Image (cartoon, rainbow, N blue to C red; front, top):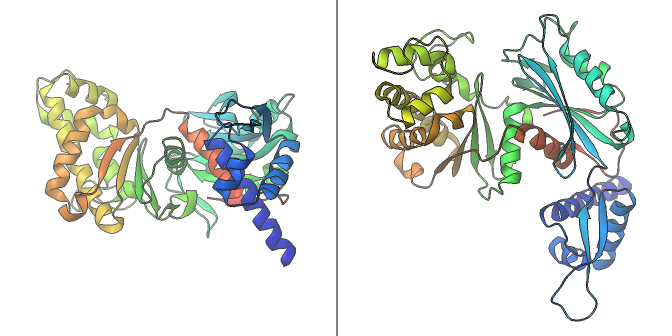
Length: 401
């Protein structure tokens, strides 16, 4: 038991050092000792181990205003250790090898066909990439990222638009475990990965915040007291299936008037048709959030009316969320950013009508600040922070969320 505890403590200390160097490239050992509240001897020994294992590099004496001997600088070592992140969508399977600095070192994309086996295609893509200089010895783990809810207890994926079960040859999670045997493997929700990236790379200070992801569906990830609720499974909340109209259209989930059904991109042609006959978008069979946001920004009256209606419906769902968990920050990510600046203004105005004002006074609402690669970098960082272990062999371990 004592040895196990010592391994846990050492693992936590190594992760803490890695993160301090990640956030403060060029930091010295003495600065690390002060920040980590560890002795200089302990810091030196742990840093030397990370150097020996090629996680960090000592670049020698740095410029410093201090008198006397200049302290050495510590940096993360690039292109040495990687996490393979494989994202599944309805059209493509995308693999990126992300190094521990957050940079993509290799990218591969495979089109999804009607008979595509997502698991086998993902494994084959990984094997094709694992050649020098990306040998398997440099691979810390593999993340499969899905736009779906994951039930860790029942060990199943559900609430997804992907044709997974038809092509898995049985239980999908068992198929994953068997196929990727020999690698540490994590199954993660896409919205959670986007949210974690936003937290890490935009340096969010609020301990309670919500990330709302607009894509094929509408998902949400919540951080409560700096901890992701339900880990990266999306199984603790299904924001897209908040009913904003109990008498509304029937949703495939069995409910009526679900948020993603009412404000998803598929709803836009009908909204434009109802908003007026003079819209520049009138008659288009497929309208994207980007189309609507652009037309509204540049003055199209019908588009502004449709955008206002979406904002009101969205605010109804948000007001319920605010009353439940009271996040101090709400971030709209994914395709939602394409709705433009007017949408944010409309949402804030509508919340004053639909929400509990005492809670709303302390809430900020903004768009996500990262690009489409955020999901891959977020998955890499989440895997390192939550699942990777510096002091134990995690080969063949399978993590859900």
